[in-house]
Amino acid sequence: MITLASRVLPFAFVKQVNMPAWLIDFLTFVPITIMTALCCQSLFVANPGHLATLNVANCLAAIPATIAGVLTKSLLMVVVVGIMAMAVIRYFSIGG
Image (cartoon, rainbow, N blue to C red):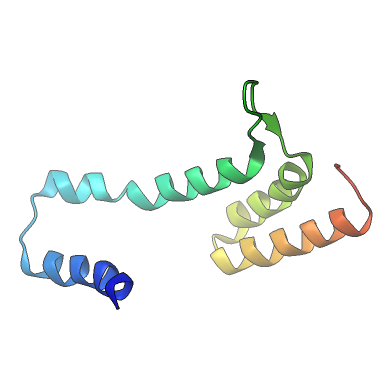
């Protein structure tokens, strides 16, 4: 219940408040920032005490998924192509 409330209440609160234009412009960058953070987290492997290394399989799967996103501008296609690419990569044991 608390998790649901913490996700729903901000939307209810924001609908009641008149936000300045600069804040609305700033908030338009939040979704792309979150997606970039999630993607970068899956593309690198943390090595304590050393530099991060690339997760080759995820990087290879990201290439066709990114192309699908640029061409179709559809999140569904990005997910479907990404899953298919990862399935092929794992089936043929490519990239690690």
